[in-house]
Length: 97
Image (cartoon, rainbow, N blue to C red; front, side, top):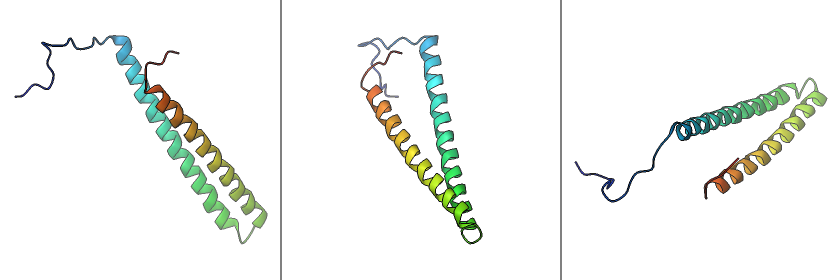
């Protein structure tokens, strides 16, 4: 079997409990963000469907649903852009804080 790491030449980085807990916390946060994004999309789709359903019987309420969905989509997009920019900034080096 071929070795992919040459442990004779370099010492592997030491892992400690704090580093492992930080990685676990980071993965948990990534999962939470993904679930929150899916919930947001489902809420926006529900509002759009409610707006279509109410279009014939209550046009004013339908307009409110469409308006709220539009504001929600634009806000979610802005938050997603900010989140991805901050995530890519952190990949360049170590972040403290």
